[in-house]
Image (cartoon, rainbow, N blue to C red):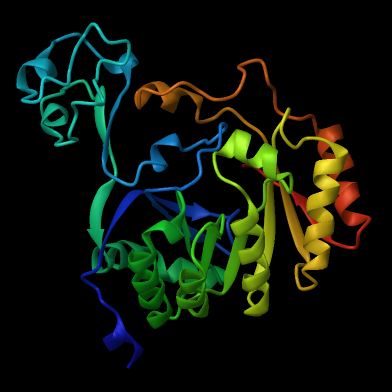
Length: 310
């Protein structure tokens, strides 16, 4: 009955499907990364996820200067005088340059897929889901930004009997929360700071909607884990971590917080999409000693805390 209620033809933009994850929900999981995010975190490790549309990426390390892409681009968007080769104001992301790039310097981030196409991919891991008590995690970007596609995909996953998780900033309307949460088993909720001014400065949006929606998510009674990216010069200090821990404690039903140390794994992607990295290059990952101190702050409030890769 449930299966008949799913719109398997609903389309969304997916930029990656990652298998055998063990850090984004229980058991072995497949993560479906969706394009589009209303936030612009300076440290974002998936900057290609922020744009909701398909996006041409250019990796200069693979370029052999054959100029084939320049010759086939009808929009005149390829210019070898540009540092990043692509004039983003002219590029329409048609992909013709990619088809003629034999060195792999040009690639496309994002593929339009139907719910059925994604489910067909996920079915390949269904045995692993059952054996490990795992399932499917939707991430991004912000999966709630593609709310119609996310809803239908979650419904389809539940019709298969799979455990469902979403990793979200909760920056969305109350209606989206109410529509989608009934189909979710676990929420991985990103809370970055309680300081509104700092949130806007480093992320580009205020945090009031996020904090209010956090309370609404808890009211649904769905298991929720709060995730905190620990970023030097932003929130890697006692007060910031303590404020978030106290907020989590005040939600009553949050029993676990994950502290995710800052890393630079996605820095090279910024050049590929013609953007500047938003953090100072000399900022380093917090030491294990520092992370343990932050972990203790959370645990002292009676909340289970883990330090994990971000």
